[in-house]
Length: 186
Image 1 (tube, one colour):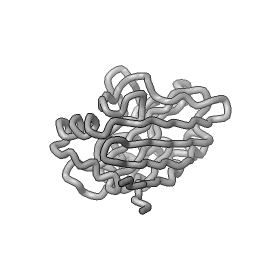
Image 2 (spheres, helix red, strand yellow; image 1 turned 90 degrees about the vertical axis):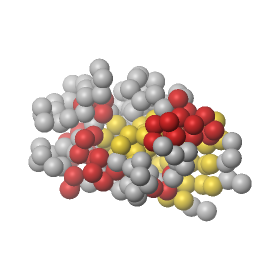
Image 3 (cartoon, rainbow, N blue to C red; image 1 turned 90 degrees about the horizontal axis):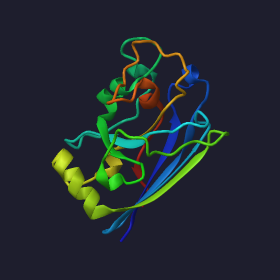
Image 4 (cartoon, rainbow, N blue to C red; image 1 turned 60 degrees about the vertical axis):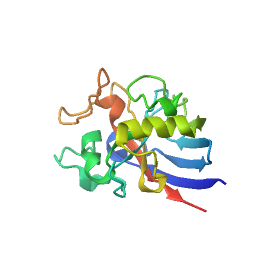
């Protein structure tokens, strides 16, 4: 049996980054595989874009961040400001989501038009095992999660108040540019 989920991914921080990133995601879950398809348009061109699903480990229903989450009033909704409504970063959409290895440089790169398409088939048991180690439950609860797309050019002027340092990656890498609520469709 397959369960299908979708997310309409809408712009975040568009007025500050100069482009309105948007797209769609489709996730198909069976007993053995999670197939992830994400297509994005109008992202900052020619750079890598981190993408993940975020949520609350306790199963609280995550919501998308909006301009209302700009707690410090700097005009940007940074990664830390999304946590109150969206929870924490959980599963990366990278070259091996099942490993749940977040900070690295193995995410999709947008083309010169700001487009990228991402498809990955993930072994669900390995993902659930690693998810349980990190969050205490094997249940991915996809319909309680949100998808974030991150990343702006290194040359974009960001105020010092924009937080987002993850290891050696600064706020240019982690700044959210689009977000979508995952919904079950069947």
